[in-house]
Image (cartoon, rainbow, N blue to C red; front, side, top):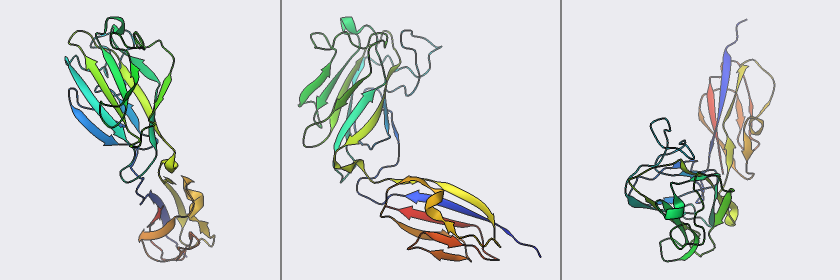
Length: 242
């Protein structure tokens, strides 16, 4: 007797006001933009990942542009959600901050009118933080009602550096729902083993629901999150929604 091979594909989907899929925030040099972010997102300079901490040149891809302008970025909690944006600068390297060639100001607000949380411009309390990227990792967290942080970054036309890499966390308000990480299993359609769909995804929040989005045959129990194969069952996809 011949049996077919059955592949189950498990997808996660978050249907929640706090949800945004993980993203890299890489602004356009000289622009002013607002992004809704969530835990797991990463905020970069306009050059994106990479660059050299204390050198400039073609051998250092990923450095910010020598644009001669100010780039303004506002990071806010997920649209319709709650919580406060918090960023941790694991990399923070700029050119000659001691003389304010390049500098950053961070405001506790959704614009540039709020309290200044960081300032390495001339006269700022954090000068010359960031020169050659040899300063300690630091974290900045919004405390204002909007939950947003606004960043002003000035780049000269002279020399560039690696810029920054800052993972985002949403603190308070739950930080958004998490439906976990995709998974899959490859089985035969004559298997008599009941499959626990929850065991095939990782990191999911409880309280979600399962649906079958493709495939036929077998017995799918949405309430229990299980699937029992049967001869003739086809490759199937299931989604878990929080």
